[in-house]
Image 1 (cartoon, rainbow, N blue to C red):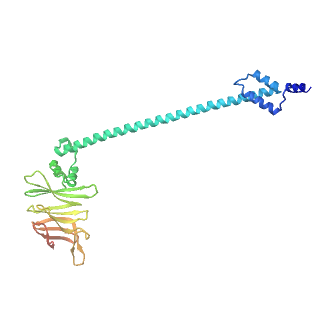
Image 2: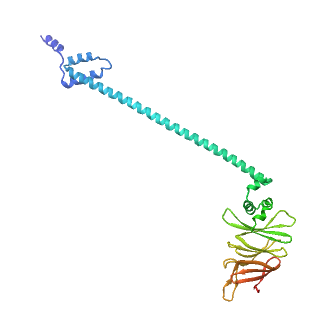
Length: 313
């Protein structure tokens, strides 16, 4: 009797709570795409006491989740492909830009080398022989600047008759010609006037003076020994006398009280040099204008000032 009861209990259908039935259905639905068909799921649901409607809803939810997961995976693949394409496009643009930069640098380098070679050839040609076309291209001012600032006096030799055109004043003597040249500007901004001499029988001019400022008046003594001149617009402004043979220069009278010196007057003021006139009365007597009228100054054979007197007309 006891054995019969045990057998009947083992054969009795197993009962599931609703929660257990739902979990069984979920597990069965998860296995649908792998092992079980819908008919098999229906059989399992029937045996478990799960209504067909609940089965179909569970299967539908599972398929929707699977479809959403698949779409999400496809979307992520699409986004990844777009990121790769954008990255590749940026890389191509960077490579193109780098290539353009390299090409530009190569072009600049070639141009620089060509320009440097041309400049060296030009300098070499200029240092040996100057063709007529190159001479026409270079201005007189360029020659003057090179002659003053570089000490290359041969520039003015090549300048030829243009020296007469460039000079602001020419003083002709019996044995030489004196050229008063316009100021040339240095790289530092200073300007320098100059006096050049071309002696009879010589083709090469000689620079005998370089001085800061402008030379606005000049006069040559009758014996061709001394040049008196007036300098303006510099700390060396005033009346000067230059010995053409030795190159010595002497300050006769300053243009301002801060430069050179003035002649004391009876009222305590000083007569300063004025740009009005500079000329020779004789070989050793110079007449010049001041802020208090004209004066004369006796000088030595080297141009050293000796004695000042008011000019008596």
